[in-house]
Length: 191
Image (cartoon, rainbow, N blue to C red; front, side, top):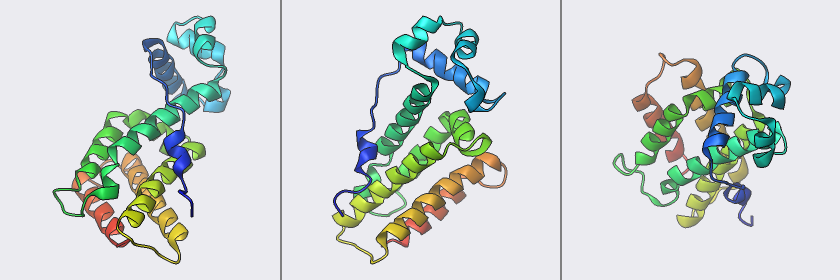
């Protein structure tokens, strides 16, 4: 396999201006009251107190705005979890779990919107591929391989996202320590 999942590292990532952040927050607020597919640019701009012309300076469509949000979240997750490739699986070295959970908590409303409220399957697939990329690189770094590698990577990535989704939709039924233990156990099965 020639560097599968590499496309997630190449997702376009742009800086976020204050105006874009305002549009993103208004988009999030509107998505809590109605399906994302029924949000219109005029409505978004009104909610954000932004001129439509300002919206079009940054985005051609609401889909481009959504994609900008997705790519920003995915790129940050990639950065946070880079240690997954190289670190040994000791409790001290597995700090990336805590960093990821802290990032998810910091952006809980976005993750809740994309994972629970109205699942965004494009975002979920990008996130799974980001996880699979790190796990694939780790297997190459440690000279590990499996005859069913693609299936195993899919299962582990889906399980990790399912764990985060469960925590968002059942906030009082799981805690951060439990998540870390379960994810470490799952990832340990790859070695």
